[in-house]
Image (cartoon, rainbow, N blue to C red):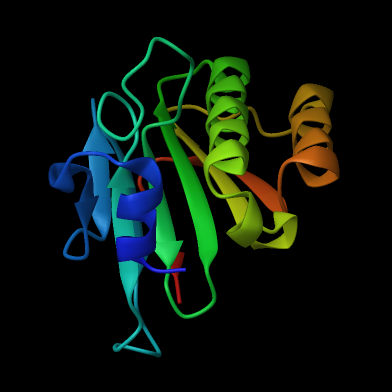
Length: 151
């Protein structure tokens, strides 16, 4: 799966996709992909909210496609409402399941909730992570801003 495949499947504006953006931010919350080992690795950033998905459904802010292995990294930049952020990622993944069912394996989906404040430990966070792993994707990370995902 590559960026052009997604553009066709989603039939959306060219502005929703970029192969130049590795860092996204909103209201002081930041998520960044850092290429440490394989500088030739290719990622595509998709702006989801009000671009790729324009309806009033819940949706996350961004998704990154790692081209070499078709992994999807769903990112929600959220102040403090972790439960709502989870719902937004869940809704976006379900939307993708409908649009690209043939190239959207569960083990290639990852969720990232980047927040201003993350409770150090709570049963609710564990439950969200377990629910994600059961039905939505491989892993869900709930992290404090700024966050760097390193490859």
